[in-house]
Length: 441
Image (cartoon, rainbow, N blue to C red; front, side, top):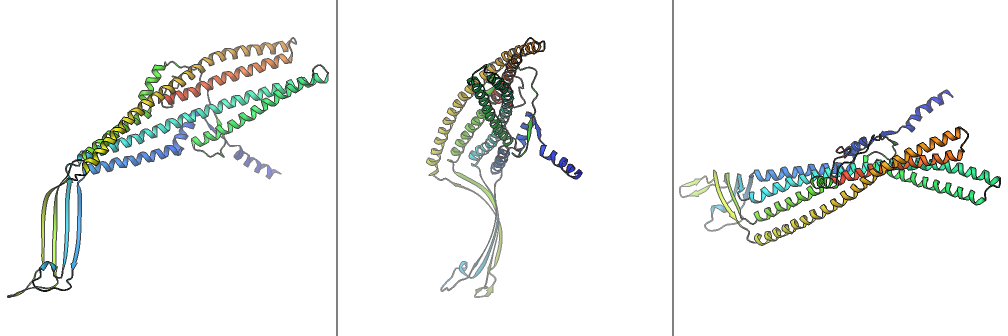
């Protein structure tokens, strides 16, 4: 028996282990483990390599080392034969450096474009972080809201169960009809059904939070939240909107994309120019004939080796590129116009988001004040009902009614607080604000 007891206590902590998380810890875990952020990070690294490649294309010349060997074997010949077609082995080694001196007209814009693409990837990663922080914050507070609803519904069930028992007792004494008992039972079952719905809602939010912060759904978590002593919101709508226009990453990304198309237009204009290559090469050339040369004076060795430098400049202009590149230039102009309209549309969407969440924050903040007053009144009413019951001048029904009002007032107060925090998290995202910024705006 003693051995069984030891095994029980060894297993129990493993089953009861739960991870305690506050909002800041959830955000840190999400930033570290969420695969979307990791994907954006690798995209940013990829764009960084593209920028390095574009820089090398701009700075480095074309450098070639060429090595060739050719063996020529004649099949038949008659008459006077050129020595170029006699049996021979030819070796050529060449080292050349060249650069299209007009390439800068499209390689410089290409490098600027690559740097802007890297910047877009960086801002896209930051935007993903902001969205993740918003989603984690809203989900975290929604779980707390559901917890408050569950607590209120459980208190309501206790109260309705007492009412049902009281109605049954009165019915047994023929003081009320069976309809009153049925009504009490229906009220109780209705609240139980709402409790079941809220519990399922909590499971959904908890699983969503686990996905956002990158932990297994098999883990058990407990949320910790310390409510601030006061809730302050001092900004006006214009301040929030101006901050959003200045810091929303979507606007910055669109502005970068507009500059990318402007650089692309310069690239196509640069490609209209001819190719003007300037270069120098060093060459080693050797030829080995299989037979000696023959003259009236005898035989001689026709083999030779030669080394030489070659400096050159060449121009090539593809005339058909002119109309093709002009079409691309025109296309980029339309792309720029489209982005300007997208920026305008995004500003309208941001304006609507900020206004909506700003009003939600203001409404919730006002509701905190009113529900706080109601909570204090309900607490005083409950204290009086309890004191009257203690002095035997009040009934248990009065105490239960006062307790129900107190529970409802406390739930309304907590709901107002959590609604304020959810709206504030959404407003921060709408303003493009980091999670740690503006804890109380």
